[in-house]
Length: 177
Ligand SMILES: CC(C)(COP(=O)(O)OP(=O)(O)OC[C@H]1O[C@@H](n2cnc3c(N)ncnc32)[C@H](O)[C@@H]1OP(=O)(O)O)[C@@H](O)C(=O)NCCC(=O)NCCS
Image (cartoon, rainbow, N blue to C red; front, side, top):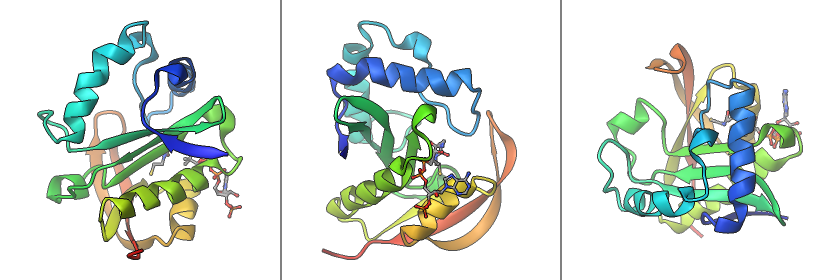
């Protein structure tokens, strides 16, 4: 059963494999941590940085909560929620990021990660979240729409990895529980 959990030391090996798969396949639309940086001290070395990021205290980064998606002892993917949506986030990466390791694509994990992630967002008291999805990412567009995403517009964005690219911006309204 898929669960979203806080970063946990026992899953570092799986996390590194997940990162490696994205690098090996040269996926530019989503870049996780460079697997070369994940050595035996990586978890401790980065703990403070992640803790500060959750408090919005890392310069140049939005406040962000990170989760790892695991299925029993298998590392599956990631979910991130940025609760303080502002103009910069709206014109860039939006409220949410999520991903599934390539060897586990097409098994329903992406859909489940977003579903569970939206519950986390609701638990944070958010009323709506913005997902910015590349116009050619048909799987994520589908997942977003079945989770209630309503398109606001399409905008041209620019990033170092991808250059200029067309992005769909979707709102998902979260019902109060
Ligand atoms: C997008 C991503 C998370 C999808 O994860 P996934 O686990 O492969 O997705 P799922 O297996 O849950 O598939 C979800 C839906 O897409 C459909 N789908 C899967 N592959 C598809 C394809 N190639 N074409 C059309 N639909 C497809 C599935 O049938 C399923 O729909 P259904 O439940 O209505 O049948 C994954 O590809 C990924 O990590 N990509 C890189 C990071 C990324 O793009 N993140 C999203 C940023 S906005």
